[in-house]
Image (cartoon, rainbow, N blue to C red; front, side, top):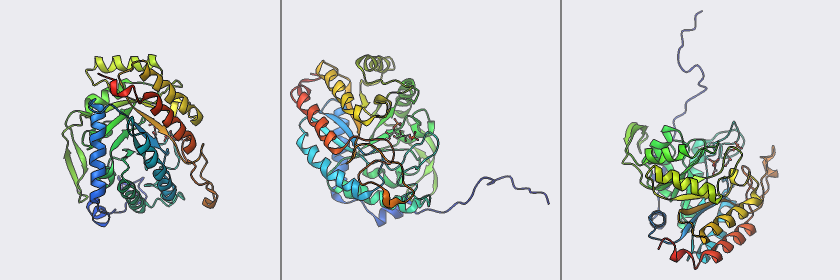
Length: 357
Ligand SMILES: O=C[C@H](O)[C@H](O)COP(=O)(O)O
Ligand SMILES: C=C(OP(=O)(O)O)C(=O)O
């Protein structure tokens, strides 16, 4: 018998999902969380506009896999954030979606139980509850906007978003970012190319029309206004770092040539530290010294930090998971994080108020 099927040949199944509206009805944003998000977004915009002298640090685990450990981390970060708040504005990394070089665990939304059961609906619930809990603590939160649909479920709780090195060049992600309500950092490409990020900034500031979903889950034409709070994130690439003063100066020239604001974030992790977490404090200190020496463009840093130093593979028996240890990229420990952030604050506390004067 002839098989006449011409579609869905590679589809295993398609399962309807809760709509954004339904999830938000079950788990509504509270007044405390709204206040936290609004204040956080305004602070980041003020830093980008040089109305706030501080530098913002996007700091936290490479990925969230254990909600209790994330809350434990957040409580520590909240105390440190208050301590350094005259100089630094700390935003917690709460990354639920991981872009993989090939394959691997894709994060808490995709596979919340880390056992290939891919309970995405539960992943959305768990992720939203964590964002609510953390925002209610008064912590500004950040995430990578990777899936083009998931922002409808979670972005109301996000203060700063990233577009990752693997997707900065993607039109879909630039379109999505043009409609995000938060400021958004575009990483340079994995090969080190900055042009993909400067092109992304030119794209994202413009209105776009594209296919998406609305809050009731209907496939829709989305029209955006454009996002004027995009900036580049230098993360190294092509086997080389790009946090050094020469690379930063080249990035400044590229921004000037493209008529873009002189706003640069440095990611201390990834290829800026050859994925060796213990090198991140050295990158932080180098960038701090650049600011002490008069740099005007660096407005933010990213640091991958967790309760414990390093990383672990996801074990076959999940009872063997070590508490507070990353299952994706290696992170610096909480003690190292406190030490590095305090050092940065002490070095910059008298300098930042006079910067850009
Ligand atoms: O930040 C995390 C990783 O660097 C990124 O998701 C790629 O990870 P992989 O190369 O281990 O797949
Ligand atoms: C995946 C990440 O970074 P990059 O896109 O720079 O690899 C990340 O910050 O988690």
